[in-house]
Image (cartoon, rainbow, N blue to C red):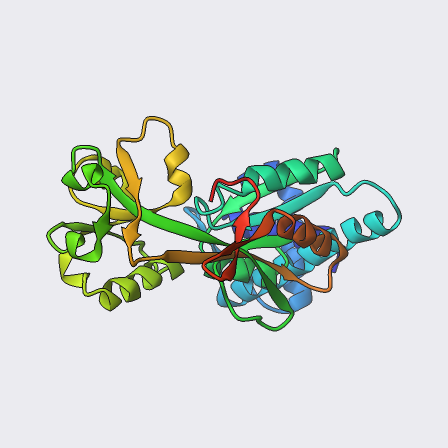
Length: 305
């Protein structure tokens, strides 16, 4: 069994089409089919169900695919780490982010990477915290910007900041004209709540907070883009502080007296990994401590969050 055979198999598993997979790995389709058949003979089981209309993974094929992705990722990572130790240029870094929550930090982070590794190639993917953790576990990415979690196995989480959320109100809303807003002022308003198909950390956080402040009954809409509905004047919602810098925004951000909504953001790595260690250090350098109300709070040095 050769590594190139594994990479050929992964290409077919991802494309579910031998022709497209052959073009992807740049070999002739008959040669690709031969390599896959050789793998199946060596493993003693069928990896794909082939019909005239489509190609599907068998259950054994799904298991083998997950293992192959991890193996190939480990080989790539080992290559990069070895090159780094030898003083050679690191060529590629793969980063997962809970976008748009990283809007305030990612540009600065990437600029610092570019200065330290001028020839590096960076691949960024957006996903939720759970999927980013799974990608880290399988070795598909080097680093993940995620919401707070417990350390899991070989994964290590490092908190770097807390994202502050303020009340977003349309400029036509009466609250936009008030010098001070209280929790009671919110009780006569329709609330737009954050919601995604998979219950996210942010959604759970706000569900708990709305219950805490007895505002759950005011929720009239739920969506994954509260700012759009707020801008349309359909209600009020809470948005991260960095949205104040959005171009052409049609809403204002206001502090609500007695409410301090902050959601943690951090980086998680799969260790030990010299490259990821370095990336974590760069990420942690973006936050600076600031004393507020007798306690220390981490903010991004970019002042966006």
